[in-house]
Length: 362
Image 1 (cartoon, one colour):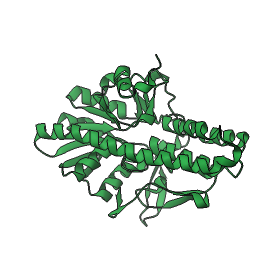
Image 2: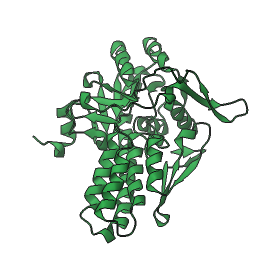
Image 3: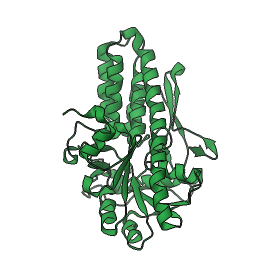
Image 4: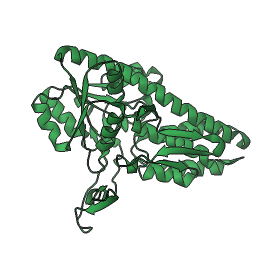
């Protein structure tokens, strides 16, 4: 998407230098800063420390991280050690494990001398596929948005949660792809952006929407319900970190509450995600491993001080016990539809398998 009118991707690969450049999302929205990733440890840190966020981008970064880790003539031990290090960085986002499994399947049968070039080629393929799939999600979502807009006859008011825009992918985004495609097609659209405490990923959503020129309003998480009740929200759309085979959806904590509010107010609740986010090996959402992140993410508030310098402020004592689950699971019954690169379907095993019949394992 655009930064100051310039088409930009979140990741730049430099295979000749065995490195990638990423946007340090921990510094957004206050500063746009590119970081060079040139070692396995740097790739693992970028994922673990949330310099890259969003399941699709995490997967692509892990694929490139594996390519970076492999030297000339990488043997099986080197390959598996690098995969294990990257695999352990984040437990919930299935795209990470999907990308590494795909890389392993591609590289393991090859002789050691052929692995380095193949790794860079496969990582690039994963990145390009992500872009194409996300654009397709946007085009399918445009059809849904047009139907709602025709009924409403006014500006389409969409609410989202966390960041599932182009910053969460290589380009276009998942939940925001239909927004960008709709805006570029001339459909009047406005986005309610939930701040998404405690990491405030909604600030990244607001930043990227502003860069592309999409009208939006940032809101506190707790304001979502009253806006729905007052008829100011026409649809809610979110991304996903993992979708179970039955259509249960794991996404950033707070998603479940928005789905409940949608159900109470008769508002469609959409989930946008590519095939790589669907875990057909996981029967239900209750089996999803929910990441518990460090309590300081909740105890500290980050921002700029009076001099415009990034700083952190303690809102709680270090002795205060806190819980910081990073995700929650929204049951399939609350999901109006799942938007994928192959089309729109109900949140159910049968509907998902109808889109992906090759995954039917009896």
